[in-house]
Length: 332
Ligand code: NDP
Image 1 (cartoon, rainbow, N blue to C red):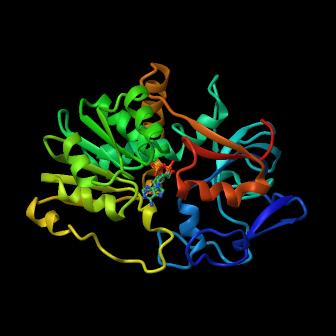
Image 2 (image 1 turned 60 degrees about the vertical axis):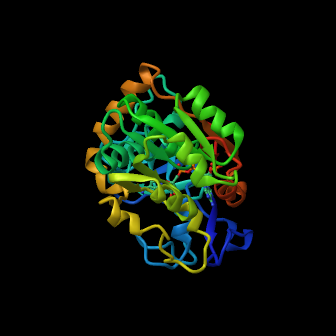
């Protein structure tokens, strides 16, 4: 059983020596557990948070533990009621070939003709994040202008399309001309702004002539500041992620334009998708129906080899990936 063990805490960027790759015995499932062969490992920005010993929404990964990670796999041995050999399940199988996991901590999926990887994207946590973040936290109304950052990413691309389905004007912020073209030409965003271009506030302002009613933030930092500069009265800011700050040593610098939260009587609210877990079926039913009708598009970026996982994680921070990033751990 090959696995990645957290060996050191990151200081700034993710370096190879943070994790060690080792081989160990196959885990033995106990009573109520199953042995899962991991097929896909989800690579998420939050892995950088979990590696750090900072105050966060769950325990950091302990030094010496297998790196935590969401997985999709197949049950190879079952000692859990309701799960049989051959079942496809998602859960926290970690950065390893095989995991022994409590049956209660797994979700059994019925592929029903869909690619398995979809259950790590729109029909998994990513889809639920977009759905609850937009509809429960940001609460846009038809006709409003919705601005979303990391808009060509896994969450952002779904958020923008869902806001379009609601009848909003949708503007995405992304880091390359190709990503901007994809969200406008293929996903139907009304406009896109490349944040690497010089005048960020000017470019967002031009793309949002009526100002910003909802800002769905995936990145924080300078982009959050630019959005705060342009918010309308009673704007809502859903703080989904702050990826531009995850590699910073000093945490806690606030946005320079925070005063606009007062001036514009705005609401700013963070959320963690797992707080909505009881309602995931509602999100998956809605997203499944949109996918079936061709109303939602997504791209998966699947990279081979568990041995490459640390380098693949780094792609999230350079943006050198297209869509939801997964590692193929073993064949379907
Ligand atoms: P993405 O697929 O969006 O990948 C991350 C993207 O972030 C990159 O592609 C890159 O896009 C952009 N990015 C990276 N560094 C910077 C930077 N310094 N400045 C601006 N943009 C940057 O990942 P996810 O969709 O999985 O996650 C998006 C966000 O949502 C993350 O912040 C994540 O932590 C958060 N999240 C929160 C959840 C919750 O429950 N609250 C659940 C899941 C995710 P580009 O090329 O455009 O720069």
